[in-house]
Amino acid sequence: MSDTEQDESKSLITAAKDTVLSPFYLAVSKPARRTYIGTALFFFAALFLLGTAISAYVLFYYAYIPARGFSRPIHLQFDAGQPPYGTVSLSKELVSGQPYDVKVILHMPHTKSNREAGNFMLDLQLVAPSTTSTSGVLGNIASLEKFSVLAHERRPAILTYYSPALDHVHKALQLPWYLTGIRQEAEVLDVDMMEGVEFNKGWRNIPTSARLEIQSDMKMQVYSASLVIKTRFQGLRYIMYKHRVASFVIFTGAFWTVEVISCFLAWLILSLLISSRKEESPGPKRERPGGAERTIKEEEDERDSEGLSDTSRTFPTFSGQQPLRYSSPRIKEEEAGETVPPDHPPGEADDEDEDEDDDFLLDEPPRHYDDSGLGTSMESSAGRRDALRRRRSGPFAGSNE
Image (cartoon, rainbow, N blue to C red):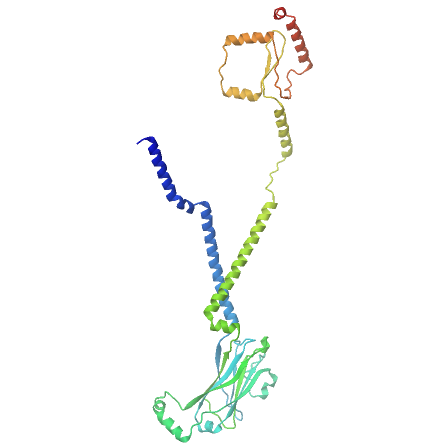
């Protein structure tokens, strides 16, 4: 195989290798690495902002959506000469601007007095907060005059009526349950007291306690009583409560988008400020004492060296003396660095020196240079004229003519 074929095979292998490895080279190139780093930073920043958006939505949900409802037991008081009554604390679970449905649940036995009482009234009052405790003061309706009643409602209630025959049949059918204690001869009354009650803004307009009174001409027997308050969601609260997943996705995405846009604008503004400061502020100056004088001196030396010619010069002397030669230091350094063999033998050089003594010609370059100062005085000019005169009147003058 010849060298040409080997070179061609090597070039083909190299080309194939470059073709195969070109994607790898692109993948590890400097722009690609910058892209990887930027993508990783953006990814982690997006994850961090997403976590922040989720936390913000969760906090907003629990702060904006009140409790769906709550129940409070009412401990009735049976004082002599007064109808049964009871008070309950509502703590701080109610909020302003939110409609509520309020109802009372009574667990009453089927006693003779309760059946004979027929209809009886339930009186419910929601009381504003006060500096004194309401549990010991709310004894009757008259004592509520010095408290601010925010909501007041009275509703009737009655036990379910059964005829004597039907009552006996019902008891006979329920007798096994009564004997085992699974059921009792009692009834639960669910009485709606308030619908859509809403409170104004301000902590003094939010009730913190409630008072229930059972009003009847007959003596009433009650197993237990409780107050139930349910929230009636409307508008955005209804959407967020009924459609929790969709609300979570939409609001979290909105929070995340706002965070990303805000961070991008902040990064853009900071980058513009930093770049403008770099352009306005010059580089650091290093000043040394006497630096200006040193710079001026160096400029003068450069000007002097630029004005002098590098060409070697020969200046005239008296007859019988060696000619005066001047060479620049730069030419001497180059000659010291390299040894150039003479173009002519020594004998011819001596003959040329004798001819130069007889006939001297000063060749100056056409370009104007500043003289170095050697041979430019009045004495050197006068000596040059005398030398020329002696050569013209010398013994070789007639032969030259």
